Structure formats: structure tokens, C-alpha cells
Image 1 (cartoon, rainbow, N blue to C red):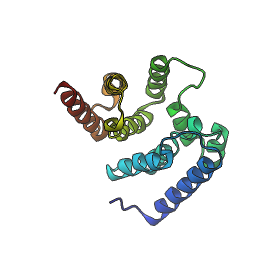
Image 2: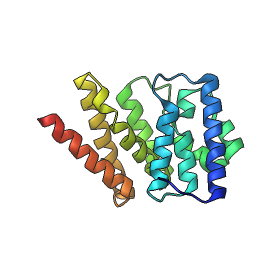
Image 3: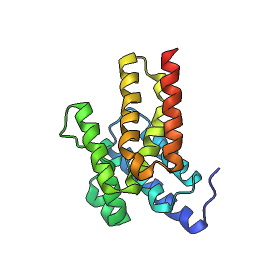
Length: 179
């Protein structure tokens, strides 16, 4: 359970309301984007990360999964949150999936520690959905993608709890694939 100060709770409520309103208006992903975003944000709050990281986590998929523009994030939540969300949003113009996630991870890394922490939590939460994927090749690609992220982010966040938990989760997933 996550317990936060009432003022912080109000900010989180406002961010959730924005996410729900924008996604309900023009969201275009079959996956449960709102639930996923809540899971990532509350996971980070539970681990003791700050309010702005949680806000970025709530909004991290909104640009790529709706018609929301980064300028709207900036206007409503400020430049810092907008920079994080922008860094966490993949480039829709890159069609090759591997190239797209590598470019995204490099941009996240360039944006700094906070962006890396949100992306790490995002991958960690997504890793629990791998069991629902039927295509073995796709499962392997997702596990490899997580490993790639761990490799490039270790110097900056390798001592963070979210990185350690993603590393442990990745090891469990790889071990289960060997059986």
C-alpha cells in the first residue's frame, strides 16, 4: 500500500485525472494503458521515489498511445515532467522495432537518472505480462530488450532498487525459458 502526504495525493489525483481524460478521449492502444501507468507510478512511490518521478510514470505512455502533445504535458505539469515524458516516448517515425527501442533507451539514458528509473519500472511492470504472450520469439525479444536496458543503464542506476528488481526478474524469466 502506498501512503503519501495529502498535498502529494492531490497532485497524483490531478495527474491521474489528466491521464484518464486524455486517454479516454483519444487513446489508441489495446493494452490497459491506464492500469499499466498506475502500476508503474505506484510501484515507484512504494519504493520511495519522489512525486515528479511518479507523475512522469503516470504520463509515460500518453504521448505514444494517444493524440496528446508534449506541449500539453508541459503546460499542465511543467518543463521537468514534459522532458521526462518526452524522453520516455518512442519515436513513431522509426518503424524497425529493435532500432526504435534502442533509440528510445539511448534517449532515456541521455535524459538522466530519473528517466532511467521510470523506464526501468516500466519494463519491470511489463515483464509480468510476458506470460500471456503466446509467440515464443516475441517472449525472447522482450526478455532480450530488458537485458539490453539493464546493460546500458547499469552505470547510472545499477544500485537502485528498481534496477536490482528488474535484474532479478530478468534472471527468473531467462531461467524459466531454459526449462
